[in-house]
Length: 357
Image (cartoon, rainbow, N blue to C red; front, top):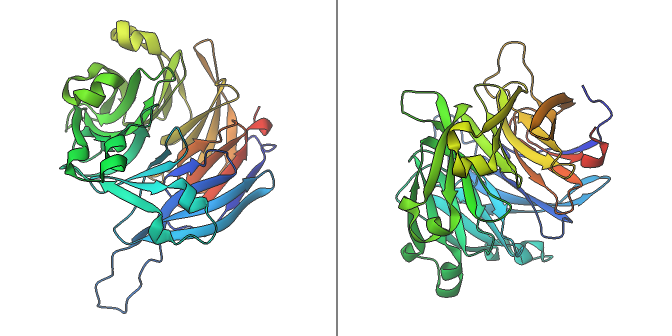
């Protein structure tokens, strides 16, 4: 255990999931369930509302600023647009788009935060990614085995509607994690299985520009990625994947995923029980992994694994204590802070990157 790592917790959330930083890093956002109903015995519970909580971020901890409730269901993975103006959160068959300036404006009514929503014919929207130019949104549809592509630029200029749906990228079974390559050319997506009856999943490399125009023809390669891969991050040279049922972090060569996929896997290391979220730190020399223990394995605990990743070599350094079921992660714009949603214990966790080994 790395007991010297500095961390702070903000508690009292109900099943927090997606996390993101505002454009200047002074504020952070987390979505969760809000005000669950507890009706008298024998009556049908009302549907839980989804909500977005805003926190101010500092070296001394997290301070809750405001909460907005949205009755149309839960919000899951989220992302901030490159220009810092839009907050996009997956949910239902698509995603909801919120105005960051309105959320950060003191005393603004939460009813003014929502700009509009995307819908598709799919189900199980769980994570989102936004193109580098901010024009397009990609949503993983876990229950429909595909990614939906939406034209955000068109929606914001002409109004949200069915015409915003560009199409679908085919994937393996249960796609979840996505990330765009640092050079903006590719989108990487994980799928928990390659077939309905299997547990061995895949990493799909997608041509981003083609996905914005012809999504169904945009797949570049698909490779084996361990058992139930669920999240992915990328540097210029490497792509890292958490394989939840393998309890591993996998490393792939970014160039080989395009030119020679069969030999793209370059490293793997055991990290802990059921890893899910992950984040890059220390100028991409460190990977922080959320060992979720989401299935309560015998004798296992939830924690954060810290892995040194240099010259295509992975080394487990140690563990950081965390809340229950750490899930999604976000890194501050200046790289000094990692935020984690502790889904099981209802915490938002802040880790000081400078205190990591």
